[in-house]
Length: 314
Image (cartoon, rainbow, N blue to C red; front, top):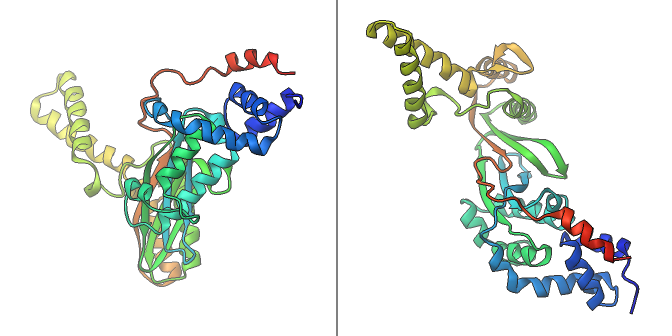
């Protein structure tokens, strides 16, 4: 039997993303053949994949793509249990492939999971196979698609982990009949603003704010005003003023542009319209930050234990 060295185990782990002891076992079963061990990991893992579905998956990647004509953009969030897996080539390739699939699917994450990859494999089946090979729970958590009839959709990937994949991604759609290259450039700058501003925008304008979010803010401001001891009529006026100020802070068009704080995004759009000689409007934006809103639950796999166990491979 071939000698199963730590270096060989490390090579298989980096290629497959599977755990150290699983990689060692696979190599032992396949006489040190890395490719055969990859197949072994996948075959043995299929029966275990369903058992992993209740484990928290808050790590992973956001993948983004823009269509060839520049008028459609998509984001998909593919989650795994650990950041280690997010660096795996197979995982990153899958995220990119699912984003490509999303460009051709006019639907949500469920529709994408039911669609087929370029290899003819159903996306959900591809995810199951990844779980089987790598040994962690994974899920295509969410997806977004935005298009314009005329104009451009721009993308910005923050904290990139590879081609088309990052920890945070933003799409911005600008509608207009002017130079698409100019619109794409301005759109990307606005996307960078959405990614980097200290107060991420909650909506494009005040009319699009979630009524429940507005009501909660109003409740907070009312309570604060009443505790100040002001008469009710004055307190109510204070609340209205604070709500207007808060709305300007959390809606994209009213925010100061991070690249030029003396100019709002709304003013930047007006300037762009003059530059292109045609009306320009922000049709919409999407911001995906990896794992936001996910209950991470118990801690994931203990890799320190795996390293200690690995001392037997030499």
